[in-house]
Image (tube, rainbow, N blue to C red; front, side, top):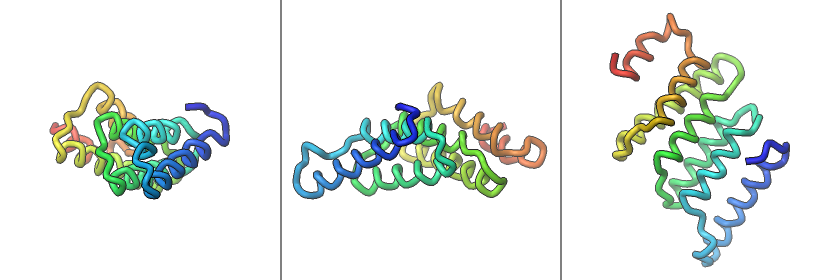
Amino acid sequence: ASRQPDSLDKVEAILEHMIEQSNAGDRDSAPNTTTFNVVLKAIRHSSHPEMHDKAEQVLNCMKKTGVKPNIITYNTFMGACARVEGNEETRRRAFSLVLAAFSELQAIGLRPDGYTWPAIWQACQCHLDINADLPKINSLFDI
């Protein structure tokens, strides 16, 4: 995905158009898992200050439209949440989204892969206090 300032807006507009066309009866325009993954990747590579909220909106939209997320979806979503900067409240919220996504992917039978763990580790590093949050980290990794 491009890092141009308006590229995220363009990708989101295309997704919205595809959904509108699909809802109007054009099933060939329906977004699929890859479509949503591309939008999540654009969010992850953006500099949007609330990318975790945008990513959550896209993931929820995906589910609402009946498109099934895959491991790439969850990895990209968690990667976006891991990159969030901001105050402690914002970072804690982003981390809670990572935890929820990790639980959800396991609940639907997906297995973490070589991209899942680095996204979680990055979220731990960026959003947690290693001393205060050690129990949370240990439970995540079954330590």
